[in-house]
Amino acid sequence: MFGLGLPEMGIIAVVAMLIFGPKKIPELGNALGKTLRSFKEGVGLGDDESALKEKENEEEGQPKV
Image (cartoon, rainbow, N blue to C red):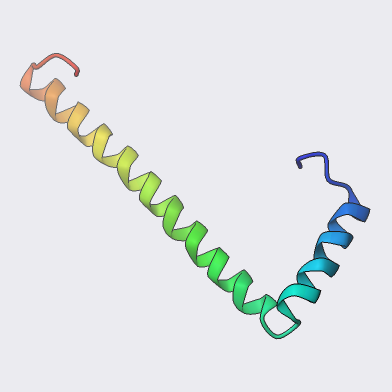
């Protein structure tokens, strides 16, 4: 994962604790998780829409765009 080992991850965690504080870290993690989840849903929705349009075009006999 990006060439990061255990020591580097530990340093990043300590710096995050110093910057944000121990009470804010869970809130940030929760917000990041919600953001990633909504991004994945948005990306998946776009794929579904394009597949649906492609299927409709094939049924109508239109060439793919």
